[in-house]
Image (tube, rainbow, N blue to C red; front, side, top):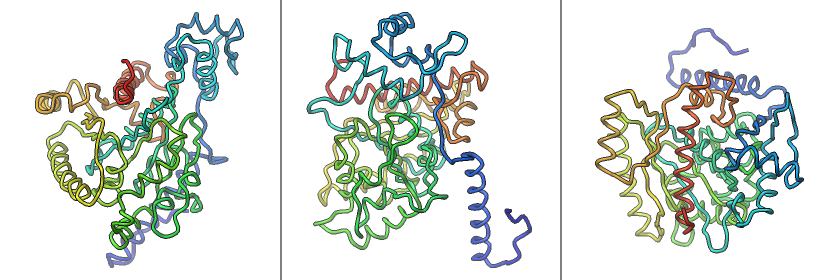
Length: 395
């Protein structure tokens, strides 16, 4: 039972401690209720029409391939309609690729010398939709057939929770900190966990990541530079993934700088308000100075892309659209064409620690769902084009 009586002490120390205790108890009760009875998230089934959109094939072609035994039958058929699990979608890709004229048509994994894509999502402005962007990108790319590793560098571990792990409830879960710490680090492969979402693994975040700030300040050296620890941890599992999505904390410290040094591309989400634009300007000014510092001591920063992503976009709001137009005129191709809409569907999904891809279209107003999904699809598609362009593939 969470206490609701007023906090008796006037001491700031006691007040802060009591608020923290009550909040933690409430969070634990919420998580236990959300994931009861077995604390495991499960992915919904996907109707055949949605599967065909993901695979970029016609419904007729899927029926024909199924009838000919080229692909598996759906695990569930209701009222003549076929529904596929996430794992079955992955298997469909493999089966279709086996019979495709062009190898890799349905399984777009890295080939040959194509380098591991490591995309850092960063901004120190709270409410810029960093974690929301990360989970939607991770889910979109995983559904498109890429092997995705999400890395949660935020001590608050929001991305970790969205991936079905609760570090608040299970103190034995290894986090990224355990792989990058100076004190007896463990292999990154032991930190990474497969999620309930096919093709998606997570390197969890947690409160201990805050300790890396202290460690890096004390133990950084030319022989063991802090900015290489995350890079080296990621590259130790390089062969298992095509894309890495890095969620940074809302600050500009050693952890975020480690992400900068490990990344091959950077996406900076920002909302179209003058306060957020001004905050982002300050953030990028500081980031530039920090990048220069770590370059001077040996970091090799070279990005395939450095983009701004408009989030919480409201196309009917004139003041915000003025700012969007201002940003596009000022930075042109640096601003992604796609925007992430401000949507009750996305907000409701995130409140339930889900992405729009986990919701059933019938769960909410269909027009609201369609607009939100189209928005996130457009962002994911543009990032996918950035990835394939960096690999030198034809668009």
